[in-house]
Length: 436
Image (cartoon, rainbow, N blue to C red; front, top):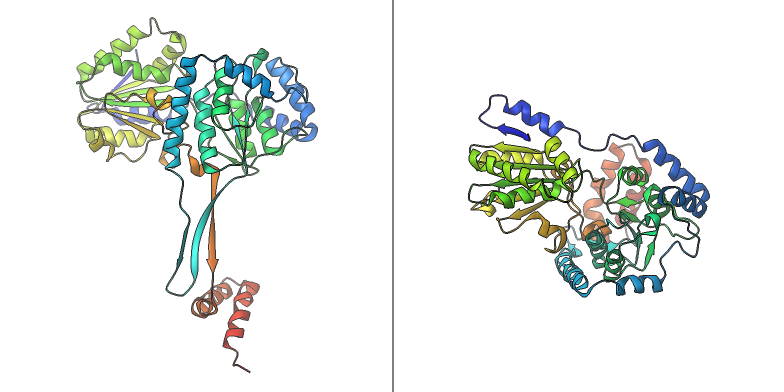
């Protein structure tokens, strides 16, 4: 049976803390292996990438075949059905429209001292987008990573996608083309992250790397951070559904399973104020698990990491939600906006019973690359700003230097940074020199 908690229970706080503290990430220690892979790629470049690709993906590559040719991409795109193409194009259009609204504005003003201040936003020059490979790949993730980068104005976009045993999903290549990606390399794993960060003979290094991956990819991104920017270190998927009794329990069950089927380490939690409804949802989950295609994965996730929590009121639900800080939060209640206003920490919020989280994975428009493992307390989902940086601007006139310079000189001396103080003081001395 799935874990059941109630705020009426005297042991609730202990049980809830235990739920929050449970470690769901893969326990495999891959850091040493990843360090060796990165070192090898830095030393031997393409030769190391080719060797590692043969070992892990059973694919032999050369300098000529590392990247997909235009003809190969054309053929893959042509093989996509009209229906799939139309769905992907609709998703791309909606994702682009949403992210175009995130573009920040430059600012420039003159303050009371006469100094001109401001900032400007500029994109990184190059971004590397990692896509998990094989037939079980996610073209939606290509759109979610590449389109914000293109909207930001990134000049060079490249994708790395492993092709185990030579297999690739044509929709991934079509998604890359729809997103303005120029080059798609058929490599993956930690070696792809190393190649993107440090470059090889065939691959120019990038400025930032985004995209999901396995434990090796996550460890590699952690290691190259600082050399390049990264989006985040993503953990297993999560969903929290807050629902009242006026919902179809089968809908809520399916919403919970939509994340459980991702990974046996994923977590699905229901919070409700009605114990009878909680029982109905639990029964619906068990029924759906008898026929779900990925039932083994979903069942393990639900039994090991899932939970149903009964609360006295929505105030308790909001407080618990903030402590969970879920990646995905569904509010299936009568007044979802009112409850959402009282919740501070969530990667993405889906309001009302007609807004399942799954719609956000594909077509709604907001990004589905979101913070996990309670990191929504301090971070946001992927967006345009992840591919941009802010540069501050300062311009002083002689009059402005006369007003604010003395304070700067004094602060520099208080920190025993003599040259700092002299740098300002020399200009003040010139301003204070009597005319000849």
